[in-house]
Length: 74
Image (cartoon, rainbow, N blue to C red; front, side, top):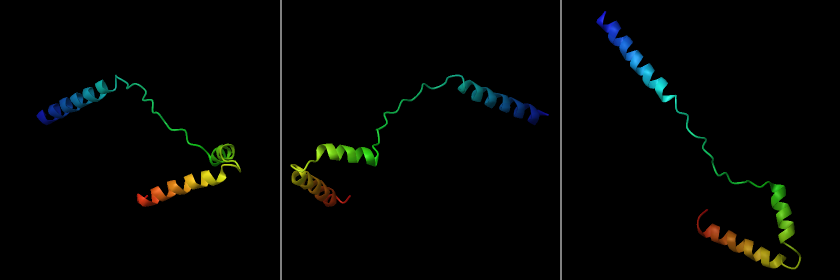
């Protein structure tokens, strides 16, 4: 009989703690998500930025970035 009472009291206490924790709802977490570009967006941006006149310079920039990344072990 004593075991039943202790078990019921234990269940009641656990239930009260669980239910009281549900009263406060956390505020919405707003994450700053990066906007991910699609391939088409990258291509359109490249067409605007790279012209026949600056093509060699842009290629040099890209090659330098690739060499730096290769040197860092990426």
